[in-house]
Length: 564
Image (tube, rainbow, N blue to C red; front, side, top):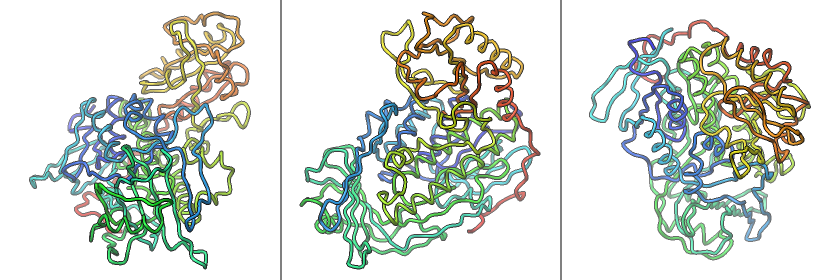
């Protein structure tokens, strides 16, 4: 690394997205600083839904077990209209999906991620805010202000804004943030209810007027703890805030704080069964907007999470989408910083993630207005999409040419997990997630029913990797279930597994001897016949190494954030 830089990446905002960016960078050896203007974690259960795809990402990091021990399962939702049960949504997924839906208060998510990041050597710099920044072709100059008022100027290679809906980084870049706001205001409360509702089920109770409009609403999401829920409901007139701040009416607002009596009044009107609420831990009024940036970054500065996209909380998509933003960007930054990919790779962050953000914003707005039950897709597809298992970059710049059956996992798609992998050293079957856990780079999966085919493909990978330099992808040999070979005889220390349950073949649908390149974020980068291993890897690595012109410089200095 060149001298003159105090660190490689400055991350602004230490919520779940900023912490995820730091975690993914640090476990790849990238130096970073993580700053947050708040003096401590907020004790609010804001984002509570954890999607199965996020748990897969955390499994790769080695964090999933801690999350599962702290969270509560989300099994479904009960829908009541005018006092009558009108529907039940079961959050069911295919049996091969390793994780279900979960609920965890945001402050617990932040605690677990903060402990993980601290274990990698990065501690949140609390009470520290970004005052201004400017960038040039070589780096970013940022000015920070500590809680004491002391200011510090530092030089970094890249800056990531994970600083929420009112992002200083987004404003400083002058990014467009077009959208609108819902006129309704809501209130949130973290309470205990003494009812006996089914464990793990959310409740959505509506009152529908004669003209068909919803004029009263109660939504209850279970949290860890006996009878504990995060309840949201329409706000009574006396608590209305109408505070637009910087024009982005989104998130917790100031003004009067709802009291337990306000929440009890709504529960009395709309709860499916009589209930008394108690133990109010916190409450707030909040507003909802839907906006998305016109680009996810410029030059050496990027935005992620709420700094890039905001939308209704329907389906718990926001935090999880932001965590995937961070994961997508971090592995690419790591490769570029190590000189193993060209700077042009960073352009794929916007190309891949902005279409996802646009789809999420549009879908959550529709669901907020019409309900998930009005989604035209079949229930199985709806569940997979809500679980964020259908996110695909097939149309992105890194997706290689498709190979094999059209409806099989193709480059850009999520690499499915599967069970039933065996090895001579384990007396129990493994999942593919077990094989991938802890790995920070690309993984090449080679599938065939003959050991010599696997050996030739593994040698081809080694030749390509040696020519390119840098960290070599991990190569894993998978012997087909029907093979007579007792062991995969491949030269070198190569992980070897048998598809004993046939589940890998069923889910990946290999077309004869087939290779699969799994990206560091768990998406497929390439799919190819083993005979074409060298050509496929060369093609994919060439896409990573595309050079680009020096990053366009922003104004020499940005003394104040650009207003919306």
